[in-house]
Amino acid sequence: VIDDSVEEAEQRESMLVAVEESVLDLPDNQMSVVQQHYWGGMSFKEIARRQKISINTALGRMHYAVTNLRKMLMGKIAML
Image 1: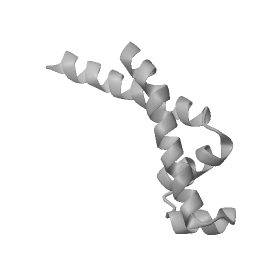
Image 2: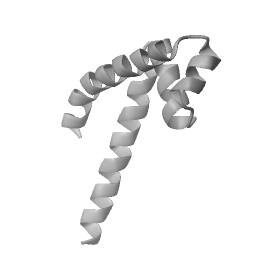
Image 3: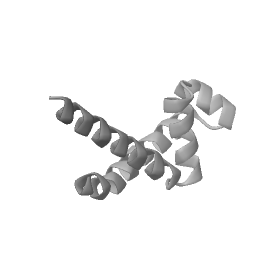
Image 4: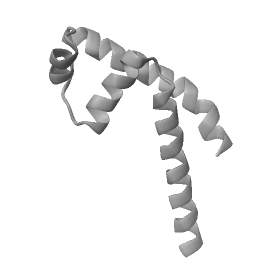
């Protein structure tokens, strides 16, 4: 039981590293929205105001970021 939980913790850590690395590979405008929303806890309204863009642009950038992350992570997670 202990080995399973250690293995699961290692897999979670590997996945988190893969996500963080993939976020850094996003285009700058997508990366900044992801970082501000998920790591900075900012709302899309706050992000839009800070970046001087419309809220729809902020949401669109997040949509493309998630799509791109999904593609990037499919290969990385399969190797874990």
